[in-house]
Image (cartoon, rainbow over all chains, first blue to last red; front, side):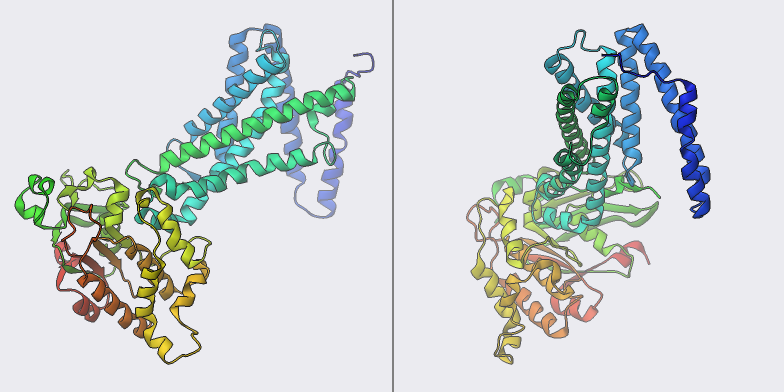
Length: 266
Length: 261
C-alpha cells in the first residue's frame, strides 16, 4: 500500500512555495495590492500546518486518551469561538452556546462513527479521531455561524413582525418558530448543495488524500460517503442546538423578546 | 358585579379598575424616561395618553402590552400592572395580550394576503377555541369604506378588495387599519392605540373614529366563559393631535405632568 507513496522533503515544500510567486507577481502587475497579504498568508498557513503536524505526531505517539481528548476539546473550543466570530451580533451566553452545540454535535456523531460504524478499538484512536473531528468541526462551525447569524439578524430586522404576533397572543415559540426554521434552512443548505455535486464537481479532500496515500479509489470513496453523512448530521445537530439556545436566550418565559440583550458588532 | 376571585384580591378600589398601573418606571440608556407612574383605567374609560415627543408614550403602551420587562424603580421599588383584578405576573401572557390588545404605530406583516393574516391569528394556541369570522371583518370594513364606494361605483378603492392584497404592500394607513382589525377580531377588553390614525387621510380617520366609537359602546366579551363579560370596553389612546384626543377620549393622563416637564 505504501509502495508508491512519496515522502516529501522540506526541499520539495520549498519548491512548491515557488508557486506563490505567481500570486505575488500577478498582484504586483495588476496592482491588486495583495502581495503582502499573500506572503503573510503563505507563512501563516505553512507555520500553522507544520505546527499541527508536530502536535499530532506527538499526540499520536503518546496515545494517551486524556491528551487526545484534551486536544480534541481544544479544537472544539477554537471552532466554537470561530463560529461566533463570523456573526455580526452578540449576546451574553453566545460563546457558551456555540461551544455546547459544537461539542454535543461533534461528540455524538464522532462516537457514533468511531465506535458504531467504523468500530475502532479504542474509539479514541488518534489516527481516525483527528482527521474526522477536523472535518466535522469545520462543517459544524459553518452551519452554526450561518444559522446563528441568520436567526439574530432576522430577529432584529423582523422585530415588529415578531412582536405583533406576541401582541396577538402568540407564545414566544409561535412568534419565533418561523424565524427558527428559516435560520436552520439557511444553515443546512450549503451542506445539502455540496452533497448534490459531490464526486461530479468536487472531489472531496479526504478522498483525494487517501488516494494519494495509495488507497484504491473504490475504497477511498466508501470512507468519503461515511464522512459526508457524519458531517451532515453534525452540522444539522449543531445548528439546531445553537439556534434553539439563541431563541431561549433572547426570549423569556413571559413571552417577551429581549432584543436589548443583542449587541451589534461593528 | 365582579366574580368572587376578583373581589378577593386586593382592595375593592383596585378591583373596580380594569387595568391598574402602579409605580412603573422606565430607564433608557441610563436616564429615566418616566418614574413611579401610577394610574387606573376604569371599565368603559377612554383615556388619552399625552406627552411631548420622547416622553415615552409608546414605551408605556409597549409595557402595558407586556412586551417589555418591568423595570425596578429609582429606589428599588417594583412596578406592577394588574388587569381585571389579577396581577400581570399571574396572567398567562398570551391570555393577557388577547384581552389587552396593543396596536403599534407601524405594524409589520408577513408575506401573506391580508385575509391570511387575519386567519393565522386563529392558529395560535391561545385562540384555539375561536375561529376566523369573515363577516365580522367585512362588517367593519364596510363601515370604513361606505363613503368611498358611494361615489365610486366600480368598487375601486373599496376595502373589501383589501382582503386579497399582499399584506406587505399595504400603505401606511391601510396597514394601521389591518392591524387594528386583526386585534379587534379577538374581542379585546382594552385597546392600546399608538397614534392609530397617524398614516390615514382625514376621511379614513373620521370613519375609523366612528367605527371605534361604535365598537367601544357595544357590550364587551360576549363569550360566556368570560367572568368580566359585563365590563365595558376601554382604551388608552396615544396621539399628537389634541383635537382627536378630545373627540375620542374622556380623561387624560399626561406623562409630562408626571415627569414635571
